[in-house]
Image 1: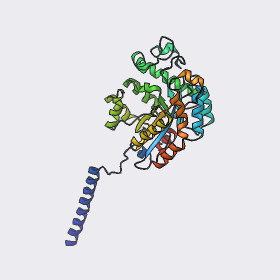
Image 2: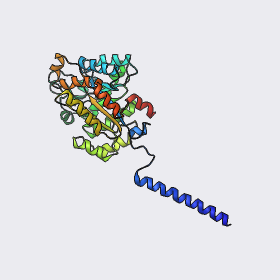
Image 3: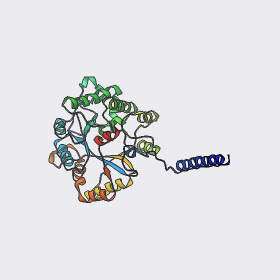
Image 4: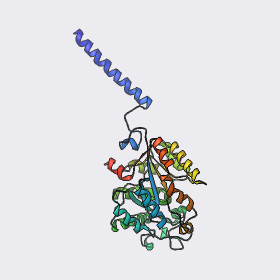
Length: 327
């Protein structure tokens, strides 16, 4: 009888110790639960995982040349083309001949340059709210929000996805030019829903962290309770953060600012966008941001920046790998 009592006491003591350790882990935050999407997808704990993503492919020849070169030399991991733009079909042809690359669609609802412009992929009669007095897409995001319904936005982004598919290429991901699809809660709902329907991941940010929510609210994005719920219910993989390559007055300053950006990031998956282009006189007539774009075509093959990434233990990924890990 005494032996049975002692065994029971030992059993009870073991249970109490287990409960105590579990409570201590919860209080200290030391649990086995993944802390971010990098860990959820199997990347090592505490690592910064980066997607270097080239926007604006297909906009012009200069953008395509720079983007293709960066992808071929493996200094970036991902890119997206603009379906309404003049060199989009060239982008798609290249994508079809390079199936190993991660290439998506930069869904485009604006046409921002002064003289180099484009119209919708959908028949303009079907999306009148997206069309400005010059019969092109609006130049500014606020004009889109003022004039275009969510229904028109949905028609246009579906038309852009279908254009790519009709050309023989199913995109690896979708994102949004100038952030327009994040400019109104109803646009966000459409963006997420269309991504889920096509099973093509969008650049959806995990909004479970209040600090991330406040960051994007501070720069003007309408992150309300509905949007947080849309992100929570979104069924495809998400990223932890999203940002862009900083502008600078010199190339050296640009490299340093990019290093500072990397150092400021928390562990998790961060997509960093930029707009590489080769320098030509034509590019200078298109955009006054040409110098930043030329530097962004150069910087990721810079030995100094590559060495910095290695020293910081940065891991790189893309949407292809994310979806493979997710599945």
